[in-house]
Image (tube, rainbow, N blue to C red; front, top):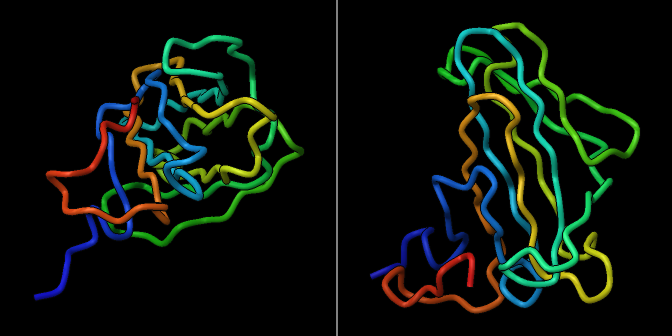
Length: 146
């Protein structure tokens, strides 16, 4: 019987708004999937830290591209680009209700292992750690903030 995606391809933290996610030593990268209904726009800020307590927390200005859509499956993703920054600002438009941004583990500063993405509005943030360095059954996955 084949193993499903959870534990083999990815791990997830569905309520990840402002939550430190272990990256270095755990996975090759993390994709943050965000959503805020109502076409009101939001600002998401990416930070890195040395541990899950936020030691040495600082903005991580590596976001150069992200994707947006309505989030309801009625349209395709639109690639958006920007100068390297620690923030993504979605427009007050239904076509930007949903946003996905990826962060590679190699983007973190030396000695930093954790990242978090925080919404300044009421947006939800789901962290999908991907390309796991150790594949496990879902029940044996480590906590993503440990």
